Amino acid sequence: MNAFRKSIHAVLVPSLLMLTGCGRAPAFDILGSFFPAWLICLMAAIVMTGASRAVLARYVEIAWPVLVYPSLTAIYTLALWLALFR
Image (cartoon, rainbow, N blue to C red; front, side, top):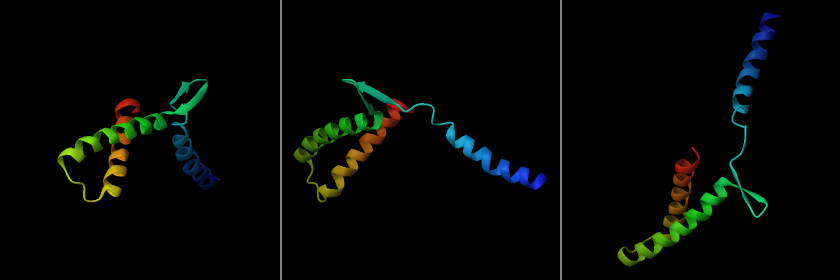
């Protein structure tokens, strides 16, 4: 019986620890509809990438724009998420 209890605890405790982060999802109410916070960060990152493209196009020739601009968008999205919602 003691081994059964240990196996239950080995499964139950980690699963409960993983569920503690499900308290509430960061969301914004925009015109009555809730948008997830990462979507707001993504939209802002797309605008920032467009501004970066305008600056970079003036001074630097981008060899692989297919890789550079999506990477910039991902970096900006994650940076905004960390800065605003850690």
